[in-house]
Structure formats: structure tokens, C-alpha cells
Length: 405
Ligand SMILES: *Cc1c(COP(=O)(O)O)cnc(C)c1O
Image 1 (tube, helix red, strand yellow):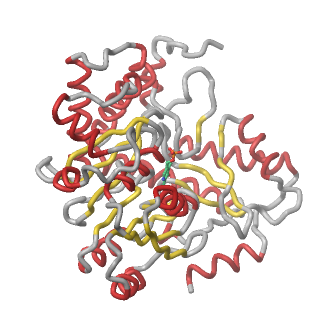
Image 2: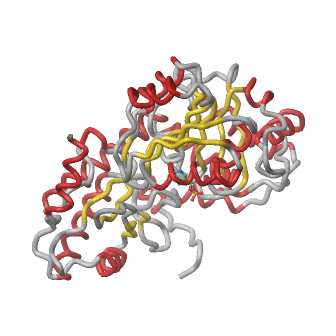
């Protein structure tokens, strides 16, 4: 199999209609890297000079489009891309947007919230943590109590969609409280930005981070932060790091149009094609609707097989869904994974600490017809393992009851 085969004539149409990935590779039902459109991969076949006018125009175009997706017209917010994976962008956001004498309240309900805490620890930035466990959502009232009790808290950090459980955290509810208390709100919107509508100015968000390979459906290679322009200017000197200094990247980019260090040129070219497709699909509304339809199709089909979701419908994001492992001892995740892969689908292990689970992503270049095939593949894989019904153990259902309580 050639690494990057060109589609046969006629196949382009099918690709546009969410046909299987070219080259026979499996669908990635993982929340990034994810399955990308052929034209996104194709955009990487050209080399660009990092200081060439064409490339500078590409960078400017991307930055403008991303600020607009966040709901700002460019008067108050700017986009600063950062080389590396999403975590590099979050670290740059935390290190640059929080002054050295700041104290951040981190709202944790999963692995990515924990990573924010870990990052602040590495940066030597003071922080306090509200840890809700594996997946319970932080609520506005408890955040309000914490902020009232501790006037030294200057920032609040939250993960938008906690990709480790798939919960969509109540961003507007938290933003309102943070704003009312006059603190600054930092959002890891990595796996939500581009699929879930958000008005950055109305929510009073100081900065948010996302990356190329999530809901915009580009390939991995850079992240970006959308932040208040005045704060980016004021943040000069905060950063702990030379390369992860957002204020310096912003300043240099405003002055020269260039990235400070070698930019991921091919990744940016692919990302612009991904943005073109995003717009053609109807922007955030269109993208979000397709993902929601993917999720609904997946969840309905899996529930028919006996699988249960960790979260009740109210909290299910259209990004990724956690399912409990079946109680049947014949079910082993590794074997199930291999059977699913043979059928063309890469799924994702779970990240819960208390019960066994796995996850299936709804994002990437696929639609509901693909999700129906995922369910069929799950049905066949269970049969091959000799699992008759996918009902989870009582302990899992008891765990889930906590969310309703
Ligand atoms: C993907 C993701 C990240 C970044 O992960 P990387 O592996 O560094 O790209 C951060 N936060 C959330 C919520 C994510 O989903």
C-alpha cells in the first residue's frame, strides 16, 4: 500500500460524502488525531517558505478566521498560534496569561483538568483545586463560594469538554460566576472549539486554547490561543519559557507577520483547507449538528446492544462518549479493540479510575452512516468474543447514579 495514494477518478465524490479514508486505513474514532478529509492531506504536498508573503498571508488568514469563530470581530481578541500539540498551547496560555504572583482556581473533573494543575505546578504558579473526581461537573454555586472565600484567587481555569469522560462542562454557568466576582477565566476548549458555539466576549473569557487536530479536523502540529489583546500586551514578561511565550509570539507576529520559530508550514496549509471545509459545512452550527447526529446514532445503537453510557443524555458531549465495559467476563477490552480494528475502526481506552470503560469519538471526517457501521462492528465483535449482552456490572450503574444525585 502506498503511503499517500491519490484517489481514483470518481472517488473524490465519495470522499466528500464521508466515504472510507483513502488508502484503506481505519477510521480514527479518537478525539485527535482524527480522520481527515483527503483534500486536507493533499494540501500538505506543497512546501512553503516561512517568511514568504504567501505564507504570511496564510497565517494572517487563519488567525482572522479563528477569532471570528470565537465570536469576536478582531477588535478585542487576537489569535496566537503555538507550535506543538495542544498541551503546548495550554501551557503557553497558563504561563503567559497568569502573572507570577497569581493564584488560579482549577476546576478538575478528569485527566485534562489534572493536567492544568500539573502544568501550574511545573510553572511554579500558585493554585487551588476543586476536584470533582472522574466526571462530575463543577457547578456555579460552589465556584462562587470558593471565590468569595478567597479574594487572592485571580484566575479560574476550566476544561470545556473533558475529553477523558466526554462531559460537556457548564461553561456559561461558570463564566457568569467568574465575571460576577471580577476574576479572569481561562478555558481549555481543545476538543470543543469549532463544534460548540461560544461567544468569547459575552462570556468574558480572558483566553482559550484549542488545536489544529480536533473539531476543525486538521492534522496535528500546532495549537492556538485566542486571548484579549490588551491582556496579551500586559502579559509581557510573565512567561516562564522562551519558546512558550504567547506575548512574545503575539508581539512578533503583529510586527512581522511571522512565527517566532520555524512554523509547521504543511500543517497550516492543511488547516486552512480544513477551515474551508468547516465553513462549507455551515461553520460551528453545521459541524456541531453533524457531531451531535454522530453521537445520537452511536449511542442509540450501542444502547440497543446493551451498552450503557457513563453520562446521562443531559451531559453527553457531541465529541466523545464513554461506555462501560460489559459485565460478561468474556469481554476483554484488548480483544474487543483488535476485533474493531480488523473491521476498520480504531476506538479508545477509557480513563475512569473507578470502573472499566472505553470511549468512542464522534469527531472527524465521518457521518451517521459511518456510526451505524461502528455499531454493526461492535455487534459482530461482541459475538466473536462470545459476549451475549453488553450490560455493564451493577457497580458501574451505581457509579452513574451519583451524577443524577
Ligand atoms: C486533546 C486535548 C488536549 C491536548 O492534548 P495534546 O495531546 O497535547 O494535543 C488538551 N485538553 C483537552 C481537553 C484535549 O481534549
